[in-house]
Every structure is written in structure tokens, then in C-alpha cells.
Length: 331
Image (cartoon, rainbow, N blue to C red):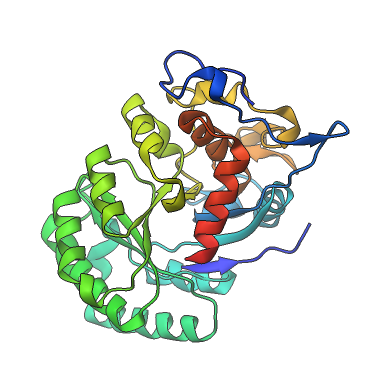
């Protein structure tokens, strides 16, 4: 994974379906002084897929609108994203990510592409990027049993073992993916535990409370995005994530908080002064300069994740954002 440092540039209650702390103890409002917001959020989006062609206007091979990648980054900067960790799902996308500023990985659903030649190239890319200070983590690697039609389990397991062996050589934090594969995922991490880097994040977490606790107890941090906030069970898990192990992400262009998500009701109470949702939203076919594209998640929406997490945990949004910033920068 590579990191980009872009150029500078409350709720007073929650709907009943969100089983957060008692509403009278919830304060997601931000500090205000003389009518202006006095606290400025700082974000690390720990997972943003900026190499995806939708950010240059290309959808399923068809150009729907102009390349607006620079506008996507500018919006992120405007809401306080000081660092964007760019992911890549295979070797070629990883090269693109390093070109943007860098991360490297082979996603479990692309594990069939991990030939000996690809692994060798990936190793070289990783070592070079780390030395250059571009790469901040090794990933995205892991297991995904929800989409075995994309890659069989045995190939995923073999690829993950190879990647963990490479991680031992690199000794950098890991950016991990686990979907419906907790037992095998934890087993392989445990087998390499002695020689693995001490820190890493299991991103886009959608597992159970018990699975989250097993990971946290072993020192693995947890990344939260819209997919982590879909159901009541998801929200119950997020409530229990220790604040010092929490990270925020969008995983754009996917994993936005949708209206049907349990957590979406919290966003209706979002403080208008936060500036986390005032952009014109259009379909990709009707794109205009300055607009966000419906259904295309991007880093400027990370504040929505923070707001939802704060409401679920019964904390101020400042507590959540400041803690996540510290956690991500420290790792």
C-alpha cells in the first residue's frame, strides 16, 4: 500500500433501531466558537482504490465522463484527509498505486494471478517502494470465501501463505482482508505470528464480535467503512471495537453507507457545518464538473463513517476522528 499526502488545501438523539448508548449521553456535535467550527478534523483514509478506472470516468470499459481524479483528491483534502493510503488489487494496479504514491498487494479474489513470476515482481516492487518511502503497508492480502467463484479456496490459501512469507521479509505493517474465512485466516496469521510485523489492520471488517475480539487480543487493528455498518449486528460489533484499535476508511469506489444500512439513520443528524455531504450528486451519465457521482464512493465521505461510528459508540465525533488519526499515523 502506498500513501498519498495531498497538497494542503451532532446528534442529540438516535433512532430506536440504532442500539447505541443512551441518547442523552451522545454528543457527536463538534466544538463551535463564535458560530464557526473550532475543531478541524484530520483523516487518514486507510483504504482508497484510486487506481480504479471509475475515477477517470471509465465504467466497464466505457468512458462516461471526464477524468476527475484530481477533483476527487481535492474534495478529500477539503474535508481534512491529510493522507490517503492507495490500494492495488494485483501487480499492475499496485504499480499504478505506487505511481500515485503507493501500496502493493494481490487481493484474495485475484490470487490466481500470483504466479512465481508475479510474486518475484511483487517482491521487487515492495522492496523498492519501501526503500523509497512510498509504501506504508503490505496488502491487501488475506482470504475471501464469500466470492469463491472468483478464486477457489485452495488457491487463496496457497497465495496467502506465500504472501505472509514475503511479509516476514518486508517487516512492514499488513493491510488484511478476511471475509467469511476467520478460522483459516486466524490460523495462518498465528502460524507466522512470531516472525510477522507486530502491527496491521484487518480492513472493511464485517465479522462477529467474537472474531473481532480474537483479532484485537492478538494485536490486530480493525478498519471500518460503510460495509462494516450495514446491519444491526455490524453496528453491535463496531460499538465494541476498542477506540485505540480503530481505523477509518472508505474503500472507495465501493462500501459507501447506503440508505438501507442500519447506520444511515445516524447521518440524518450530521452537523451541517462539518461539510461532509454538501456536494451536488449526479448519475455518471450526467456528470458535471464539481459533482460527485452517485454510487461511486470516495474519500470525501470518510466523515460519514466517523459520524456513524461516533453515534454507535456514544462518543463525540472528535473523539473518534482524533483517535483514528493517531492510530493510523502511529502504525
